[in-house]
Length: 289
Image 1 (tube, rainbow, N blue to C red):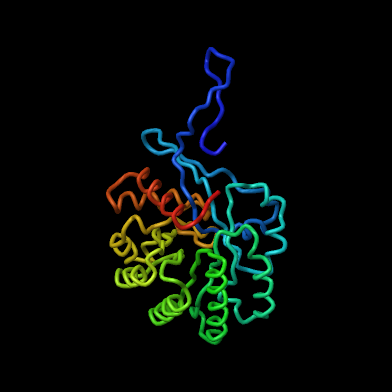
Image 2 (cartoon, one colour):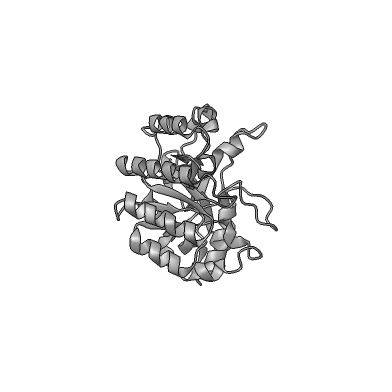
């Protein structure tokens, strides 16, 4: 059961309903397909942990982004995936493959969208390794934005390559989407000015705070930048298994635990409050059953 679990009273045989006291957490961005392709994969564990005061936390939902079309057939048709109610899905075409038979890929994407997808993405612009495909990326971006708009689905962004690319991306989004459209700004690491500009243009944007927050050596300014944000705009994401901060055992969705702990220190509050606020934020953006 979702919110309650069954138990027996100590002296009675009748069934008693006991409210589940675990604090619910949502990992709004990870990549199930990458786990699926590993040898001997048999499913993800239940991600739970306990903090001081016997507070128990559980990652109740995980949102997997399926953005590599070569994996769609094997992964999305997997019986293993269909059995797990806690894993939800988004679908899109990653900008790094935008120049590779993109016309056929877009046709396949359009066919699949009527499925049980919570958003379109992640997709966007990425010139971190050069801009030779930028024109194609923009074409694919515009098509996917239109698909998100026409299907009333949130957008999951991917934007890499510096200030000019981020500004161009935002311009295209504001041209293509209604002002109130829901946006998940994936792996946000921009400054206060960019944060406020995005909120002004697209006020229903939620910003994914990822394990980059745990990497002070590579992203020394990110902590202070996040402190400039409103908690009501933040959602949690592990981007697992692609981000693996050093000094952490693995790169699983359980990295969400460390993100919650760090945010609690930064905002001078409890882990419970961070979990409750970010979970509420995720529910505002995504429509969970």
